[in-house]
Image (cartoon, rainbow, N blue to C red; front, side, top):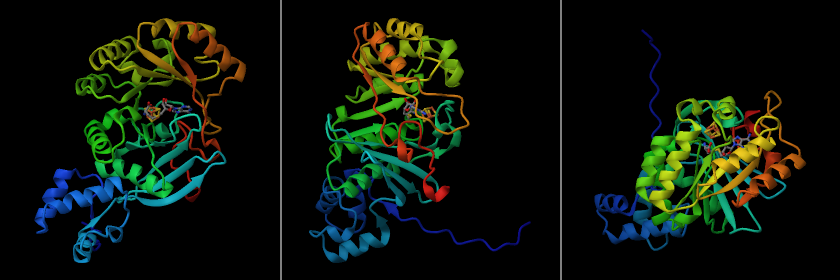
Length: 355
Ligand code: SAH
Ligand code: SF4
């Protein structure tokens, strides 16, 4: 039996970011304050994006001091921020148990302002062979405050409104379904981010896609298909053994029928593996009856040791033009922040403090 003295647990203050208006009302009532204070708190946290209680000038100083003793606004602690030559910002956050996650802020001149790429888990269990996050393995799900506060923190740091949220950071969002949905509802109803400006990217967790279809949300569902057939997909997405291509396509048909929303098909381009003329034609045929846009993502390198390469620009363009003949809108995802490893699939908590 160990005789080492037990360490006193470090008290983690409860986060107000992540609470609904109803939860704030209960909390304020417990503190003996009138219930309208909850509305004010809610407004400061989600709309005015306050990061300190001192900013909340219409609340009595004594109430602000009491709040600060028991609560924080969010839990995230910035471990490192990197800014790419293209303006993309990568934030490395330390969570209260010491785990690290990343969020990425991108600016697209041709689109609707800023987008933030949010993590939903620490690491990921899905283990796609081309992805740096997959190499970390699965550590844990993020809580609702940890998800919501990525948005609030980054927006406050930027000092401008961020209108778009993509769940394309670390983790498989649909494997943290309940927290994901609670966070999305808060981001939409409290932080006032339009549902149509929220995208969930999934590797294809069929039972959760069916569950999401029942919610009938106006958000964008993006699906990492990455191959038009099982033989190709099995090579780099082990999850395909459990939920193969034809079942995935059927679940997407059902999703579209129930929600009436166009989905996005994501297709990573891996040289010599899924980028041939036949792959382009088969993908075109497979998706012909799906109401979807197709987003091609040229592979972003995640290290020397892996077998994948990005196809040449000619191959990428040829793939795109062949696929476009099937009548879908096909876009090429421009890489962002590759010089700071902030592009798709490169999020592996490899900030300079870990090197
Ligand atoms: N887990 C979810 C969302 C996070 S990954 C999913 O897999 O969909 C976001 C997107 O980046 C996915 O389409 C994923 O397949 C892609 N991706 C992963 N690693 C990549 C890499 N090295 N280069 C380019 N895209 C990558
Ligand atoms: Fe997980 Fe997505 Fe990376 Fe696959 S691509 S390992 S699902 S984060």
